[in-house]
Amino acid sequence: MTLQQLDALRDQLKNEMSGSSPNLQKVGQLLTQAKISLIELGAFVPVAGKTDPHVMTTARDILEVGAYYSVRIKDTASFERYIAQLNTYYHDLASVLTPSAQMYPLIGVNLLRLLSQNRLSDFHTALEIIDSDQLQTNPFIKQAVDLEQFLMEGSYNKVWSTRSTVQGEEFMFFYDILIGTIRHEIASCSEKAYEHLPLNDASTLLFLKNTEELLNFASERGWKVNPAEQKVYFGSEDNDVVEIPQEQIITRTLGYARELERIVIMFSDLECDYINPIDLCNKLNQFVLPEMGAHAFLFFMFLVNGSWISLVFNLPLAAYNVNKVMKGRHMYDATEIFRTLSQHKKECFIKLGFYLICFFYFLYRMIVALIAADS
Image (tube, rainbow, N blue to C red; front, top):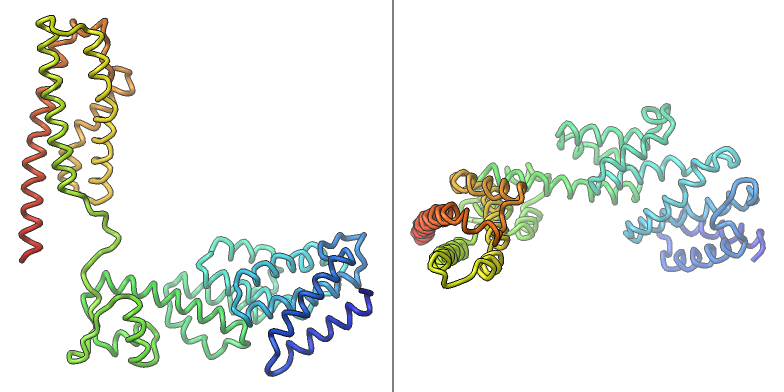
């Protein structure tokens, strides 16, 4: 394809997209042809000083149409790819190309996209490469900057009130996504702050226009709506809490106690010369690291779940195990076993008592939880 044909294809794309009701299917086909032509002309990846500036300008215009087309078909990933390509023309090749009239509108749309996806670090990175004069004077950039400021302040009502000032279908697409993100954030906070709310208050709080929208949103969030009371119930379940498997903990604690009992018996066998030190240490060392690892896992579960009593109760044993591992004294040594036998037996009896206390404590907690659940 010649350069003149590529220019004609670009003009056709622009005319099609600028219409009141563009044929998006046709635009997609034209974009495919245009990108193939750009590859043939070596302009798909432009290089300053090598690629003809006129070709680069045409390529930029085609990519801009592609960016708008991606928003119209609601393809956010495609829009992001087009913007990544256009950044080369807008910034790296700014010295050899005339400014594009669509540069700041598209940058503004992209900033709004980043806000709607809650990618604040990328948002600020994108702001850093924009001319500082444009941040407060260009309406497309200022709109995104103001919205980000409102979000940081928590002034969601200001974000909602700017809806009437949003211009263009492309901006409105990402603005609606942003409002949806805010709405779910408010919903998550409401679930933790209230047990229920009147329907009208919930609609106002969530920026919903009518009861039907609220019912759809409540169904999406799993809320219960009581039409008779005109209230929406959020439910008291906290899905973020990690449940501790109490039955598993009790079973594991009993297992520890049984293993410790076997160890004590094996120590007695060693004293009576029923087993030699090497065999004894080989058998006992199989249980050392699994026992410490299992206890560390339980300790971590208590920490995550916020079970502070159980956490504090298990803290000395966890610290003792860590200290032994760090000093390299956690494994049984056949050459030292006779000298340290009494110490090992004492340690086993203490651990046996500790795990038995844990067993009765967890059993008590499980019974209390079952009674509370039934009531």
